[in-house]
Length: 450
Ligand SMILES: [Zn+2]
Image 1 (cartoon, rainbow, N blue to C red):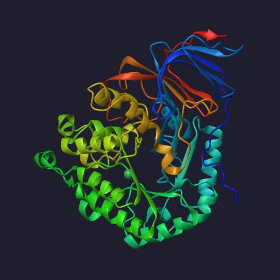
Image 2 (tube, rainbow, N blue to C red; image 1 turned 45 degrees about the vertical axis):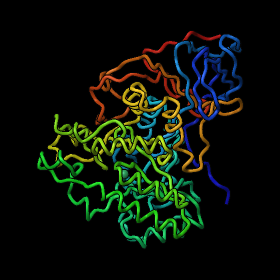
Image 3 (tube, rainbow, N blue to C red; image 1 turned 135 degrees about the horizontal axis):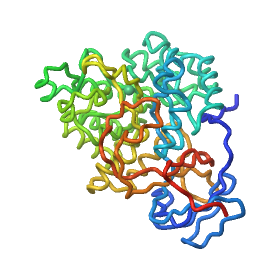
């Protein structure tokens, strides 16, 4: 059986463009200086000193002076809500949102309605993506049927039909024996198991991080150990079976320690962190009880946030993932306790990290770019790189641009963004995904055609 294309996208016209004089920053390619970048037929054809490359006839010329050019970002954790909840998001709006955030590929979660737990659902979803997706999309299938935790899906068949891997995201794989069986099947069919770590017997009906703030507000808490104890358990099972696991959205200090410990023991484990857990804490919750700040795992303490930052710096955390989770306005406009969990994040990921962590000197810009581009590697996808002969996967950004989140609306169908109303620095101007222009910011003008 030949492997199907793991990422799918609608057919697009390959880009012909010359980006002149942008500051090219690609840590993996060792680039950190102004260059001309020539894209021909969707491929990076030439790199040159600023002002040295000529635009071929018909190519578009983009003035990159004063702007930054990064390899395009890859998000290993988004909810596109289709099939079944298209009032929140769909393939078109979700991938437009991704492109507007500089993402050139995304990985969609299977907790849809119906669940992506059998070949027909996966096949029709991939077919729809071939018609609608503006940037390449990969799909995870669920580990258990209907996310119920009782019976494994036909993992081998789903892999054969293009599943990148498996997850019950939104829920943990609660029964240890079920995870063990899934890891045994993984040996036969490949595909990483991505794990939402939460022990429901500890998180219960909690609606925010368990700590001083939840106590003060009298709200039910979700303790850090509901996440970290499951990570420790699952890392032990993965180590025993020689399996490969990826831990989704780390939120707590204890969780970072559990992943670090497992890595040190040689367990094949990777981990992601979200821009909101890296930049916000539960201290923001009481200010307005704004339900856009309600997500799972919840915003935790400043100490937890510092530990997540430390995990990015020391390599315990492999990549940034947004966990983009759209909800309709009326679903979120209810009392805190009743609101669904989740925040959108694709359009704000880069600016939030740049404003809150790079500008104050907490993280280097190169590290942020590296972690925003690393997500595909977890699923054995190629990592975007600015190098001659590679497909053009590019993000052009203006680091000086300041904007207010939500002021001009969103490309996403939903507006439940936890950064809404904040003034952020750094704006994505254009995105080239898999060789085609996928996004241009409305006010961004190009120099013209050659
Ligand atoms: Zn999750």
